[in-house]
Image (tube, rainbow, N blue to C red; front, top):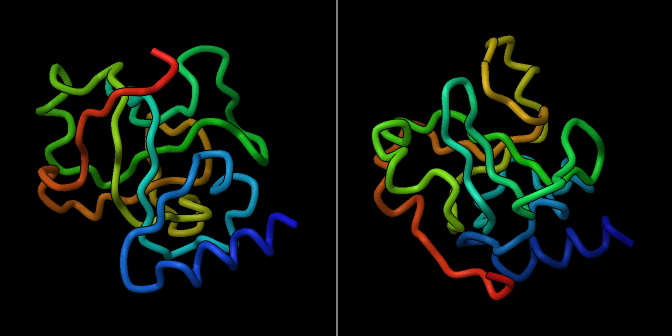
Length: 134
């Protein structure tokens, strides 16, 4: 069923960014690999930490369906730590199903899946949002 749902998301917005959840990406990473996505959640930017979580507390890491997604190649993200760390955000980038396959060692990962900001300017890639549960 998850594969069917993933394919439906792909067909809906082939040209632009797809709105997906962290759990959708982590449950069927092979479906979304290389796709432009927008995810919402709380971003963590700290020493050796760069990731977005679906829930502010009790998020899961390093397993299929995890509620944590690593953020890679975020040129300029660290400089904006005080603006965004711990805030609910919408983040746009390219989904990577396995960041380990390129052989680069990255500190601060919470899972092998990641949203790749492609070292592009951070403006337009991240914006603060309000979560309905806040």
